Image 1 (tube, rainbow, N blue to C red):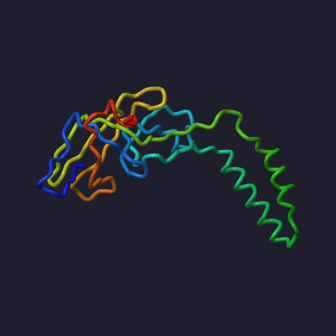
Image 2: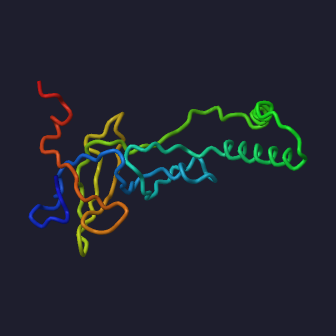
Image 3: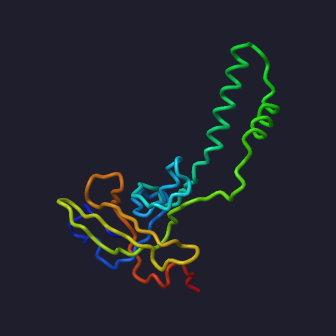
Amino acid sequence: MAHWEDRDRPYLAITNVIYLEAGTIVECLNFPDRFLDTKNPYSKRMILQQVTVGEVYRKVDQSDIMRKHMANSIEQSFKALNLSLDKGIMQRFINHQIPQAEFQEETFVVPPGLYIVADIVPLRRGQENVLHTYKPGPDRPKLILRFRSGVYHPTNINQVTIVRNPGEFGKSSE
């Protein structure tokens, strides 16, 4: 483990391979803008975004927002007129008027796993660590992440696991 507050132990070094656990908050430097921008769902722009490792981010679908708004309007209208409402019929009507998108849902996730320290920016207290995906592949996208150590920040990580032999990481010792 690398501990930032303890002066007897070293900070991370470039080329260290570390393991990021699910639930860790980091900054993703190549987060797809289309997951946040409802105005341009086909945007290819990448932005800096604070993310949680292992959390699945879904692209915002405008039709869901429109369906919720329509359901709210219908429910309020019926309530104002003191009429009973069959929510099943209402939902079928809404689904007919605003059909479900016919394309596959797109998701983005920063998977837990191994990342290599690519750059270190010294700060007054602590450091900023830039990570790249260790051996990216079809199931591990090439990501650029960043977190702080030894300084107050939402992405501050007090300790991480340094993996000494990444080639053998995760293999059972039989």
